[in-house]
Length: 173
Image 1 (cartoon, helix red, strand yellow):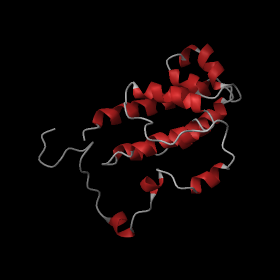
Image 2: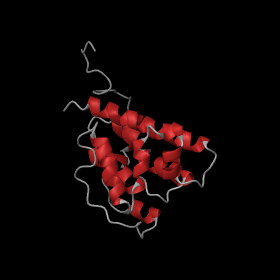
Image 3: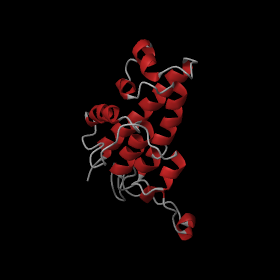
Image 4: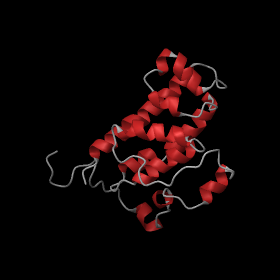
């Protein structure tokens, strides 16, 4: 399957998230509500996805949630087989936990560029999770497959780059 355009869109979205975080941080107001700033700061007007966040989320909270929601994306986007569920589930769990309506708005926003984003995930429940974040991390999730430890023999093997984004051997592109 040729998913390089989806990968490109997801990488651009990751950049948008980091840019939004940078703009929010530059306000110098870590306790300010992100949704309020998104509506009033000119530098944040282009980031429609910020309006989908829970109204209680502060700039400081957003920074922490973005870090945990997107830390796997660079690695996942470079894998030969794209783990679609892992990409979406980390965002759902870490950025929209307890906010199903915000998640639905975010998915709609994302599906304008990446049609499959957010499909096949379990339905969200309203209200924040009662489990501490570290306890949830121990539960089974689609992300586990992407972060399992590799056998030690593979750590010493030379890095062969095959497939996207590296051209196939003999390819002229």
